[in-house]
Amino acid sequence: MFEYAVKNKINLTRDNKKSDFYIAFGISKAFTYPVGVLITSILENNKDMKISFHIFVDDKIEDKELNRFKDLIEFYDTNIIIYEIDNSEFLNLDDREFTIATYYRFAIPYQLKDLTDKYLYIDADMIAIRDLKDYLNINIENKIAAVVDDFTLDKVGNPILLAEDKKYFNAGMMYINLNLWMKEQVSEKSVSILREVNLDPKQKIKYGYEFRCFDQDALNIVLKNKVKYIEPKYNFLANISLKHNKNLQNVPMDTIFIHYHGFNKPWHEWCFHPLARYFRNYKEISPWKNEPWDKCPTKYRQMRLYAKFYIKNGNFIKAMYWIIRSILKKYKK
Image (cartoon, rainbow, N blue to C red; front, side, top):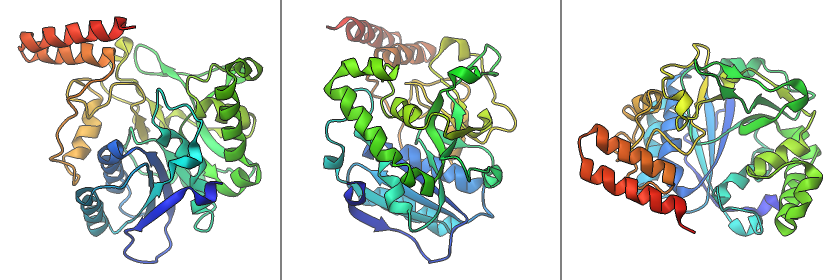
């Protein structure tokens, strides 16, 4: 089924030189801008590496966005291929909290299988602040993927890792052994579990997960004892919505990717967390430098943060407006 998930392919590649590294993303059209800044950050930190980027998207990308990706190709001599996805392949999968694009990761191996035997899957709400050379030294010959614990941070910003018997990985970064992934039918097994629990929620008890993270829970079930856990630097989870992270000014020196994995994102106008600067600095040197900040909060917590943004800027009328909106959103039945 996943072989036919792509309805259109746009190859922006300039040459046929073999790439040193392959990176894939699954995004909704609204994330074209964040993923463009993310790609910029990767290229800025890896100017001596030929990287091939593969973007799987839920709709036709506008011409102005395609031109921005072409600007990246011209400036950095990279490869970018865009795949427009047929969502009928992902029917009966829960998309209430996340967009359907979160499931595109299951189609990616079928499009890359003739190009490489390893690739990096990353979410679009990340930013690179170091080179990727350490990935080349990760041995996953006998593992389906290299992953990072779904950790939280203590008050000074150090990762609190899970005990060995409670290991649970964050699926926002997976360095994948493509051949083993397909041999073990990871995509098919994961989607089968997701459809099963969507059809009959009582089945969640059988698997021991609440399925709040949908595809991530399914992958943790299917890949249990089949992944290699690597250091937090490969996927540093920075929730810039949480109060106990409000004073976190910096990330560890060896961090490769910062993952803004909460509801608050650095491209939101109401985000004034110190770690947002990493994304915003790369935005300023990207083709998206003139893209406006997002001014449309949809979650009540985001609305409260937007109120604080206006308080900070002395606009108390608008602050009160968003406080009221947040209260109404929170308690609306």
